[in-house]
Image (cartoon, rainbow, N blue to C red; front, top):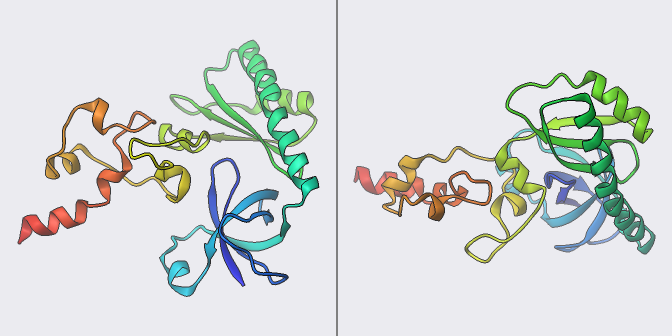
Length: 218
């Protein structure tokens, strides 16, 4: 059977197969991805209609096993280790004078690599930084530049609606949202009311946009 699974710090979505037993919504699992072994959460069964709606780029692989108590202990250990290594990496970045903001350090569950998520005004030449970090942390280093919207995925929280933010719960890709959408829906243009945690226009302004466009053309 195939399942849709959220995995990794960026809560990526993938289609994963598992035949040993039936898994349910919210089941914690260890999956195999191109990055290695990762912790994931089952969202639903991957029926034909759901898979058909998914955009290209969704990774298909397999679920290795449901999370065991030993897995949970190791996962918590890695999460605690992330903060310490974040501080170590920030120190090295400052010493090298590189202009970038380190947002989070993620330890891949299987130990294959450490991913550094950062924001920067432009492109950053981090070749020497990667060498220094590899020597410091003794593992493979992957640098990933993220946008402001993507940064919110790293620290899931609740929106004004009282539910978990869409971008950290089910949205796989950030879609374009414009002020014209807000004007068409005649909502307040007060930035503090229509901006999300990322400081950009709320993604939910797009949900009813097509309906408003159709009504306008009738």
